[in-house]
Image (cartoon, rainbow, N blue to C red):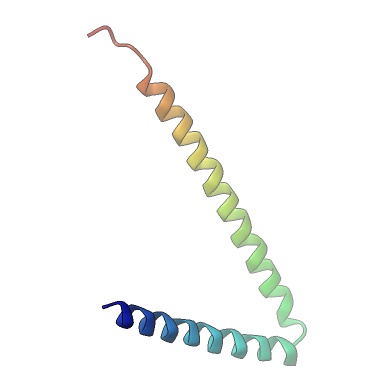
Amino acid sequence: MHQQVLAALKEQCSAVASVLKARWEVLRREPEAGYSTEAVLVTALLVVMALAVIAIIVAKVTHKANGINLGL
């Protein structure tokens, strides 16, 4: 089982590396294509930060709501 997991992980890493190499070559051939990649990366980072903020707010509101004594 352990060997199968390692083999699958190795295969996935190899696939990711191949895709990254191909995309890097496209960017090297077309310098203007980098702008769209940069915009996508910035947008993705902003989405991740927004999700983190939402998760923090939800955790704090849930914690506060659980602390309310309803007197039941």
